[in-house]
Image (tube, rainbow, N blue to C red; front, side):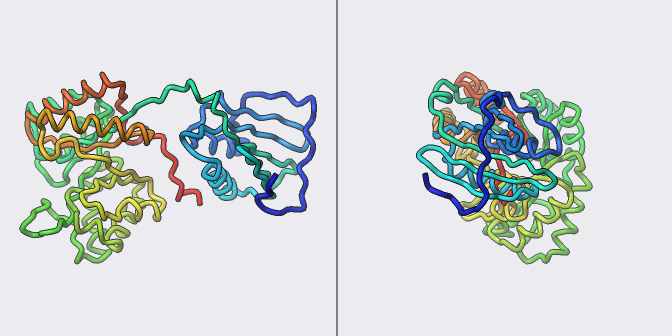
Length: 357
């Protein structure tokens, strides 16, 4: 057995009479910190257990090898527990299993975490296919067209332009439905000003004070929006200094950020992560390059491929006209027929590693 790190502290022997029980998640205890970490890794409560002895609590945590490796799980445990005051004592590594030993302040008890692959346990676990759909450019449409989009599944998220005729109305109607909304922030694209991103865009020439002024006004106009994403921004989202200013304001107001990824070299998501801001990345645009049947077929195949690699797929489309509404309705029906469940952004069960390291 290979040692992960040296320590003079020995693991105390197990009590032979210790009984294995389902974990009781008690708040503000070492057990709750460990349990929360396990759950954030996406491991069902019924899969992991603990055993108590007088001086040692042992957690047995099975890992699905197809979802993560032991090194990743080790990193998450160590980062999260140390962030909550634990001291890493030592660890050992053998084939398919790692053992981590921690102590916590104000208790003589030590905590052992055994992480190991259990292919049999996960073999029959059916993969749940989920997708998040964000519809951009609200605020510019009203009347029957807006009513049509509001009739979509409430899990479909709306991203709303600030300072447009129907911006506030759309936000309020969506909130009444329990629908999640975002602020659709105009940002400078390549080719500006010939390529027009809309009213009061974030430009790369702006300093931190100017960006804060614009962002604060947007947030005050659309207070029920819980996050934001970029409109255009193929230039602005490549500028780390500009993105730092944007993320600082969003973090101050407890908003998350979705990188629309209008360019492959966007730094928006990575900057949000570095700022410890809850953040997401768009995987694909449903209505690009058009809304033909062949596009729908190709996008559906792409979504299925993405879902085989990722736990959830995020897709963006637009609300410009009735044709796009009809296209989205038909697309949603096909997604459901393919076994997908619609979920809002805030229901995505992803663990944000930079927040804990």
